[in-house]
Length: 109
Image (cartoon, rainbow, N blue to C red; front, side, top):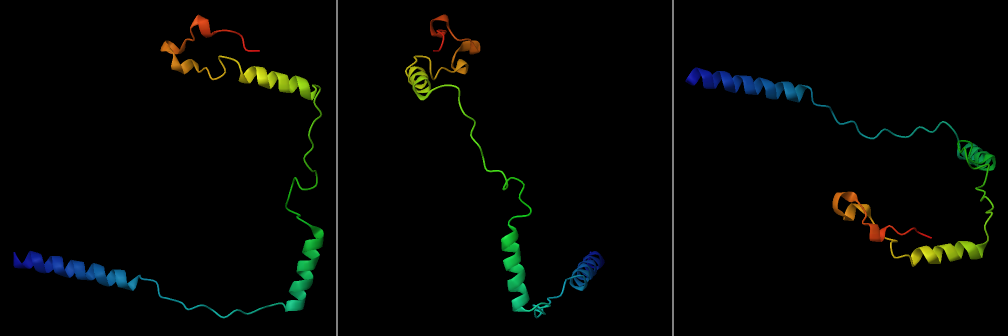
């Protein structure tokens, strides 16, 4: 019994040592070494701002709305009629076997 416990203790200590060996060390923050001066960076920033967004694919063309063939009054009348329809919020899943009863099958305006 003692030898098995000793062997287990030795194996666990070897695993612990192996874990410590593979642990990463802490590297402090490295000092910044600037390759360009502030004036060069400022001039590059100004040039990039003048060029605009070169990676954008939809910036060049603003969104355009298509003209409608219907007038405002007819669209409003249709919206009011639909809002007042008795079967406006009708959902076929609310009925048995997802079948809408005949009394609710009136055509929408």
